[in-house]
Image 1 (cartoon, rainbow, N blue to C red):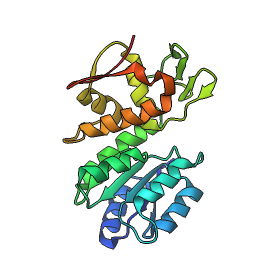
Image 2: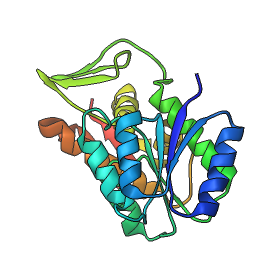
Image 3: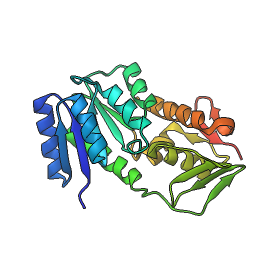
Image 4: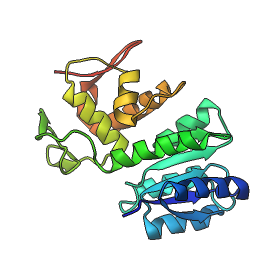
Length: 226
């Protein structure tokens, strides 16, 4: 069955271009040119992926992302931010709210399709499967895509789960940012090392007392303690 992608973009030309390329790749496409309408459509239809412009009438992309990530029924939807803003602060705010990726206009449609395919592969759980991974009270179940610490269920986004999974699979080994970008995101992109740092920070916040098990190796990357 074709994957459904919701595009929320108020620029008619850009919206038409994206829609054409997505349909040519075989995706089912829904569109909205208004933030509030896009938000309601995302809640109702629960698309497989959301392409979300930052500057929108009635409700901006950051607010839409924040609201979707707070709802249990929509927090799993991967989000790619589309924006004309290229400043680092805008990118980091988007990632802090739970966005999976960020593209600055103008962008090449082929690159957008590459990132969409990579994110959908992650969302489908097409990573290496294995038995339960345990570390003290932490239990990661790759088959169920579930994480628990003691009796508590830890709600992670797809990206956060795959990041934790990779670190645990390589426990005791230093994982560089380039390695994590390639393994977790499925591709590398210039200037996006801060993406890894932001997702690590979000992951630590959710891990409570076990947050310190993810060590920062200054100037290199991260390591999960043995």
